[in-house]
Image (tube, rainbow, N blue to C red; front, side):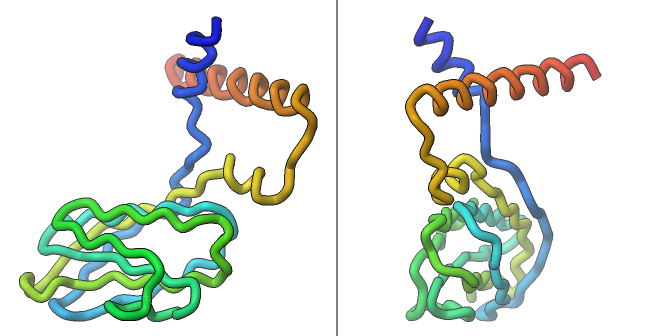
Length: 150
């Protein structure tokens, strides 16, 4: 039975895409964004053309090479998870690598609602958390069945 519950929990995702957008940036330039939403947020930056990188700061609204808390500077998909305890607003910058005259990208912003509930101090007793977990699994299974039927 515990293996079955683990399998069901792996199907349940509390992470949801809250925004997706496309952009482009010239070589050696930064584009700046501000995140005000509370909770754990994951940014996924896909370079469609060229190479875009991402920098994040809770202190500086225009993070750069020297002033950042988190970064991802790969040649492909860049992923940064901003913890729920970071103070808001968060500064986010996308940098266009100097080796590509123009970088085109798609950014997805995902919100993890399970961490938000925990960070807000939602601490019930053990029975309440088990009941809540079972209810969440049940609701998500119903959603999956409904998607299959439609």
